[in-house]
Image 1: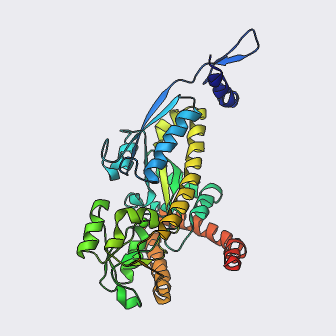
Image 2 (image 1 turned 90 degrees about the vertical axis):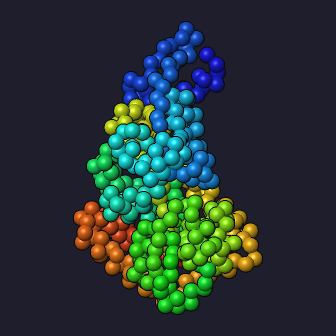
Image 3 (image 1 turned 60 degrees about the horizontal axis):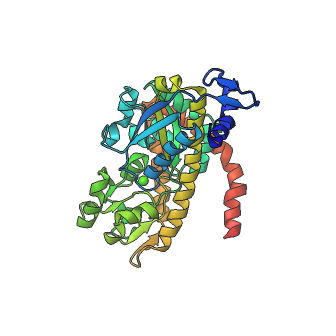
Length: 365
Ligand code: CA
């Protein structure tokens, strides 16, 4: 046996033997070394909602699959299929639920039509940041609720990356007062879109490939997307001059979700490797977004003016958000439960955040 192979399996194998007992057989040699037989090879099909190797999100999931292969010493192979190869981009949830594929990588807020509560697990306007969302999931009860609600669809979710703070979007005209929003056509999905609707905006949904042309031709007046790194690739600065700071997606969560029955059939070692690889992926994606956004901001063309929405608009947005949350809570008991858990964490976290991060950033200036 090659020395590299021996070291590779020993490092992971000893723990897995102790924990799972039966996934690897070991055999002692005369010289005292232990030969551990490789775990049975498992191949899984994972479909995404992104084009092949799409920057940050797509390359993030490519790297996740590579890490699962490396950490399992080749016994866990996850084949990544970009959008529309196995299933259309927004049918990955249904296809995994029906066990047509084993897993998917997508954005959580796409599935609010399945259960309104899912929009809370994806992140909320004026709410928790990426780091706070992950903390709520892992320590504040978010994961338990998300997994309970996804189990009804035969799904098992894991956080599969997060975007960090997103920008408020590109506008062709400057927004100086609340009334400047009246009748504006803007591409903005999710709860942010519902809040904007209450402020007089006409929110529209467009496939990614049609946003730039619609903005350029004036079919829409504004659009949000992600942040400087990915927005620059879309060329929005050629169609709009005003780039607004964010409020509606402070920490959107992406997911790597498995068919639950398939997940439960995996060895505890493979489950641990996947869990570890998603945590690594989430941390790395957040750092990559931060670095590339910072760099892309420096490189925006001269015509772009960075603006912050007027205070009266944000005050109105806070009121509108509460109305949306109350409406959704009345319609859906699951939404009400998820919101309660989310708010409990928000209230627990805020006093400490105020005297630590927020206070420090003000001091640092
Ligand atoms: Ca967005």
